[in-house]
Image 1 (cartoon, rainbow, N blue to C red):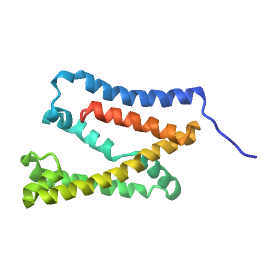
Image 2 (image 1 turned 45 degrees about the vertical axis):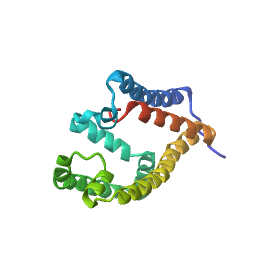
Image 3 (image 1 turned 60 degrees about the vertical axis):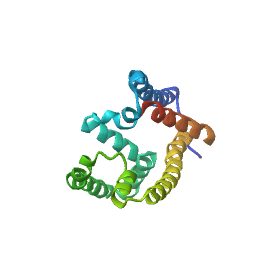
Length: 182
């Protein structure tokens, strides 16, 4: 005898509200300062954002659906050994904050690529590393998009293309119109 669990209207409401809030935050930050947005404002928040929102934005960027689904599965299968990983990452961030950031912050750099060109005086190296970074990001984003889409497909019994489309459109709109402040 097979037990099947299907989502109810309340579950669908929570999913739609969660996705709508994410999309709404992106739209809010896009509309809020629409006339005053230039490249520096959009990509760097005008270089005048407080540390906590920037840290949370970076954390959210690197904590994808892969990490959420994978970490929960790992904890379920292996216990709380994942806490050691989290502790190690936290210690690494603290060490970087007090050693690397004070060296690089005064340079007013916007990316690792800019640092490489400044350090090695090589545009060729910068372009090569940018291309490798783009390839890595493309592969990573494909997996990062698939992970929440699989969860949505399994929970809502949607076709895969619909799940990927929903997650992809919301993520793209949120990032494209909201900028770093969203």
